[in-house]
Amino acid sequence: MTNHVLVPVDDSERSTKALEFVFEEFPDARITALHVIDPADFYAATGVDGGAMANYEQIRENHERQAKKILERAHEQAAERGLEGRFETDEILGGVSRSIVEYTEEHDVDHVVIGSHGRTGASRLLLGSVAETVARRSPVPVTIVR
Image 1 (cartoon, one colour):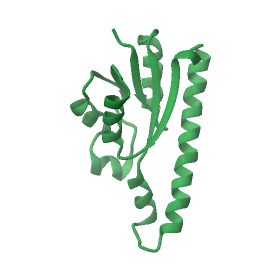
Image 2: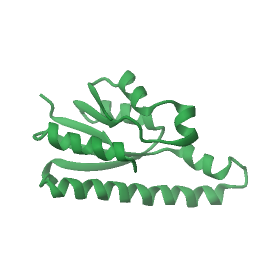
Image 3: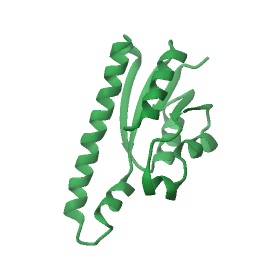
Image 4: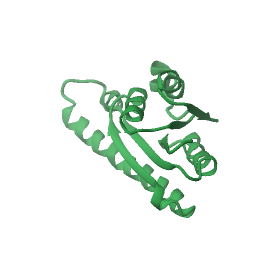
């Protein structure tokens, strides 16, 4: 029996579909929506220039604000279904795939449900598919939602 489901969320349609899938398929489980802020995105936005530290802080703050909006939307989706008591959110800083797997190990997660494609552009091409990496490394079952 699945007691705790982790759903990594970002600003993608697939992420939203994954969250809806969890609401439908795991009606009695505790659900955690997790957003990972990847510091590599800060460096990509600054151009990795030594004089860009002030810009780095501003970019980090923008990413944190965006994360809060994403998690607020997830809370709204859960509230619409009356799931407030079993639904929680969390935000962490780190490499996306690795952070999801570590969170799974450290928070007694029984199942991960992840959208098939969330990240776009160069970071997705360079890093490979987050969903695929999580599925390969996760200590618990992973469902990939398309």
